[in-house]
Image (cartoon, rainbow, N blue to C red; front, side, top):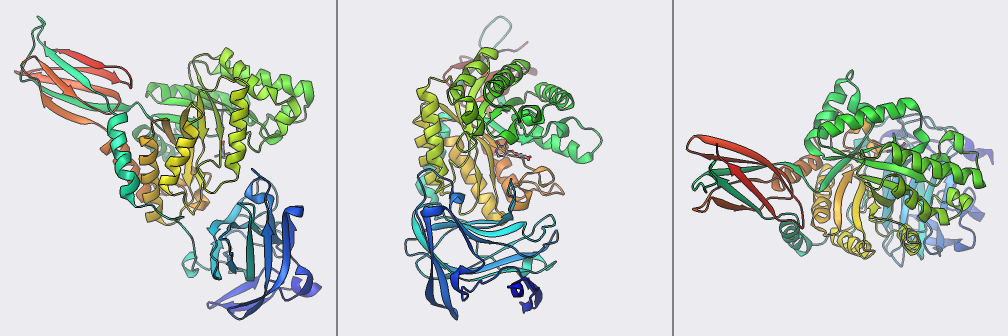
Length: 579
Ligand code: XIL
């Protein structure tokens, strides 16, 4: 028994490696070392195999309950070795699935919030294939603290696993490892979706603007040169940002951070500062100062989030409360924060992630789920009210059904919901863009406005990352129900998923291709710079992207300008008097 606890050193690829798991070839009877999670919904049996010299395998049959997350069914093993920060952990295993099941390969911390250093979703094939992934924990992991797992609850199906190796290669550099990452889950031909999307953008995101140039007596001025230059987008292009970075003047990186915020975004979500769990005067003082900084620049604040229904997301002082006391505390909090931020946020995420964060709602009564929207409306009638959740744009996603049920529940209870938020923290294989457009259609059928609220994709391949950010941006901007596209951070030095390479700018501020694609679209292709000449009647028709524009007119050495806002559903006209 003690044998497998010994450190086994072996040579692989010229590097010294330490084996981290036991019975990876399934030759020991009784699936020794392995754990199956999911009760009746998953069965594991030992079978014969014949691939790559392997003779044994495990066959797992999963039957997930409707709407349960993929991690509700698991197969895996607790790791019996310590890991040092920065160690390269290399996973190799042979898998197949006759019904092409989807699984997630995971190497994670066993304690919440379960940070993952390998987190790869793969659609298996009926033929055996070897999968290889590397992960690098950023902290020390003691014996028994980490685990290798497969999440099996993506859908019903059979999965066979053979020849599992999990090895620690210490400080071996990343380029030593060959990975088999399935970036794209099938890519549609761009012509099939992009051309119609770009046509929709032309139609939906631009509006006619009549400019009339007159002299001080009101007579039309013909032949004036008229220029319009976009100052701001009407559509919300945003990012998450910590309030502290918007106000700190000591760290030069924060000056860079603010520069990018001003250049690329018109909307900011405070990443953690308005969460109840962060409550406290210093935090709220930072919010006040950051909100003022943003307001001076015409950048809107997205309020995130009033209630997030796990005890860990409540203010520390509220975590121990239950029943009437907890209900009263939650209601009071909604009223307090909505009142406090009135006039300073354009929208509140009133409830976050009720799909799986249910403890609080179970404790205070689900009727409060709709009720707190009414409280928020009463406290701040000017703010849009949003229900925000994740796992909607990922595909396949068992979570989506759960979120759908929550939204139906909310709407049936008559809650004043204006916006549905789709977070969009995605991992490969990336949802094909045509499929994403179909999901947006499905969500638009609830009859509410949509925002993509927390977009980031964990993709280390720069090219794939750039292409996908570009395509999703086009898809979102083209969809008639979508009002905003908010990135969940942009800089490696301040990104919750920097480990997954989800950032747009590297630590040294060099842009990854995704940053360049983003800027090219948002400040290039979709940023109107127009020019023309007024006609005999002094008029000129322009069609800029909706937003704020500076219009200048010039004739005979005279020059005058005006700022005008164009918005969907209203005709825009500007009269410029050449003095
Ligand atoms: C994340 C922040 O980015 C982290 O800094 C924090 O440690 C945890 O929360 N869904 C949400 C966001 O609604 O509030 C989360 O933000 C990411 C997932």
